[in-house]
Amino acid sequence: MTDWSTEKLHADYAQSLRVDRLLYDSETEHQRLRVFENPTFGRVLTLDDVVQTTEGDNAIYHEMLTHVPILAHGAARHVCIVGGGDGGMAREVLKHASVDHVTMVEIDGGVVEFSKQYLPALSAGAFDDPRLNLVIADGADFMRETQGGFDVIIVDSTDPIGPGEVLFTDTFYGHAKRALAPGGILVTQNGVPFLQPDELTNTMRAFTALFADATCYLATIPTYAGGPMAFGWGSDGDARHTTLDVLQGRFAAAGLDPFYYTPAVHKAAFALPGYVARLLG
Ligand code: SAM
Image 1 (cartoon, protein in one colour):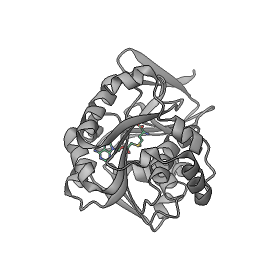
Image 2 (cartoon, protein in one colour; image 1 turned 90 degrees about the vertical axis):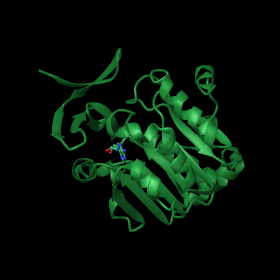
Image 3 (cartoon, protein in one colour; image 1 turned 45 degrees about the horizontal axis):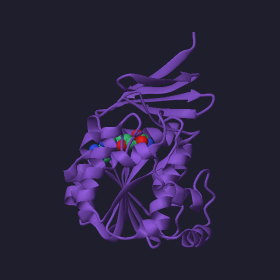
């Protein structure tokens, strides 16, 4: 009998992925970890049955939450990742030779250890990079106490339920802003606005109060079902307005070979359809 993993993140909309081989299924102190194999998406990581990342489409998400702020910034040396236990975000940040130091704050060490073993393609050696400083802590506590100085802060958390909830609060965003260096950029995983409109509206309300430039940008990741995913963007600088020509030069200099990102896609990602723009108020 064929087994399926059904995600019930939304009250009235669910997606199921066929489970051809279950590789891991266990509880940490924070959440239930599962990894299984699916013909289309390869290995799939779920936390509390919600798809976190897959070998097949993770590059879209990780490239858009890293290359967009880093190439827009143009001189990012210190990057902070909140969450990101699978290592995919660190993998993409560390492709930028210009980045000197990455602080990754993950609440659940079990996700890191488990991802190293069951999803090695996700981190692709990132956890062994000497530039990476892995901190096992609640990102909200870290951001309250850090000395900051980050050029880019990336929030790669679960959805605002369970341990991820604190990372969608005004308090956390205020601490993150304080932790940014001048001209720094905060970007956030902000859900699928067609199905999670309030998540984006709430974050944008907080960002608008905190930053001179507050908006979001979009990319469609197949296993984040329900339409394009929104990424929150907050900055007091003008990095979002970096021209296509400048992005193309920085992109060429970075020597990246992305699955999804291009400088033109970067610029186009900030063109918001009506229903999303209206959520920004
Ligand atoms: N790409 C996924 C998404 O868009 O939902 C996120 C993937 S990543 C696995 C999410 C990570 O956030 C998990 O490893 C989880 O343990 C971590 N996390 C959740 N709440 C956290 C918190 N308060 N502080 C730090 N990490 C947290």
